[in-house]
Structures are given as C-alpha cells and as structure tokens.
Length: 329
Image (cartoon, rainbow, N blue to C red; front, side, top):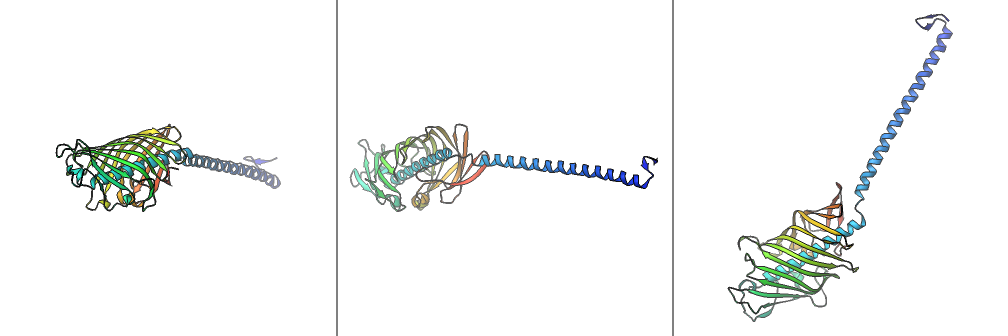
C-alpha cells in the first residue's frame, strides 16, 4: 500500500485507518471514563467510611456511659441541695451568729421565704459548751418526718443534722452536715460533709473548703460513692432567694456499675437558689466538668445561665445535648 509519511494514499484505506483510530480513541475514552468512575466511587466509599467512623464517635456514648453520667450528676445535685438547705437554716437565726440563748436553748426556727422548708420542722439547740462570745457551738435539725411534698413536687423524708462551730460566716468557723435516713424522691443520701469557712474576712462572699464522704442509693438498689474536696463560694444578695453559689474542685468514687471514676470541675459551676427552689433537680446553670471512667472522658457543659436540665456532652470531640434525670437514670 502506497503511503506518504505513513498515511495511506488510497481513500478506502484511509477510511479504514480512520475507523481503527476512532475505535482506539473510543476504547481509550471508555477506559478513562471507567477509571474516573472508579476513582469517584473510591472517594465516595472513603467518605462514607469516614462518616461512619465519625458516627461511631457520636454514638460511642453508650447506655453505661449515660448511667455513669446521670448518677454522678444526680449525686452532685442532691448534695448541693443538702448543702444549700443547711446554709439557709444556719443563716436564718441570730443564735448561730451570737450564740444567744434567747427563747431557750432549744427552739423551732423558721427559714423565711424558702418554700423547701414548708413541710419541715427546723429546730435549733446549743451545745453544752456554748459560751458566747468565746465559744459558739450548736446544732440545727431539719426534719422532714416520714415524708412530705414540697411546692416543687419533690418528696423528702428523714433528717439533715447541721453542727455549727463559731459564728456563722466568720473565717475559721465550721459547719458539719450529716444525714439520717434522708431520702429525696426515693433516693437515699448517706454521708457527712464538712464546710470550713476560708473567707478572708466577714465582708467577703463566704468561701468554704468542703470535704465529703457520701453514699447514694438509687431507686433500683444500686449505690454510688463519692469522696470530694471542693471550694464553694456563697454569692449573697439583698434578697436571699436570689443568692447563687459557685463550686470548684474534684471528686472520685465508684459508679452504680462499680466502676471507679474521677470528676474534675474545669470551669466553675454556678448554681442559683431560685432554680433549686423551683426545680425538681439542682443543676448548675453554668460551668463545665469532666467525668473519667477507665479510658472514657465525658465533658459536660451546663450552659449559659438558664434554669433547666439540658446539658451538652462531648465525647471524642463530638457533642450532643441530653437531659439530666432527677433519679439518676
């Protein structure tokens, strides 16, 4: 076949050659398209796998993790409620400030305005060594009897005992809180909490160094323990119902599953008394903390001041909102 520079001179031959070239080009285009399609499918598969891994991170907050978080939050709520009840009771009578024996050494007192005491009997008595002004020492007993329902619907029963040493809010004074068959909505709180006034002066917002040893028994009979060292600052207002308090520090113990945990407050927790009075559960309105069990770390964010039970949890960099339950479930 005659050719010029490799190209056939005969028209029929040129047509055949063109067909072969077009066929090769078509096959090459198909191969390119197939390769491109395979590449896209690979990218999509990788994206789906990556998303699936991220979803796994999102749902890695298991029912056991939720149980640990809920029970720790419930313990925290119950103990802060007990502490605030004790603080209100101590601040409600001049006898805890001056040691005065007016109206007898043992008498019923009334914490004004706080409806949590509406169905409780509160009694103040001085210890035998009470000798003002050098020694001010006495006890307050908050008795909810065999069970009474407060205005917020919480059912309390049993007793909270408060021992005070030194004038209230005086630097160096102490308040020791113990419970006796004390239940809130069927949850039993056993333990002792000691609060040492670490304020710089009586003019400061009272600041207390707290140590506590507590066991909480939940509705299903499981128990959780807590040992804590914390600092609690009482932010007093002209209207006591508008008081708030901030808490820093850490705690450790065992969860209801018998697993050891460590809780660390990473940004001061803020509590409002108005929320404590009106709500079924005393939940911080601000602040963050970390709960560590084994290799799992759960970060909890309590928000920006709203009085509710919604919190944001973060696990492995993934976050979601959940509700805290009053009974720890």
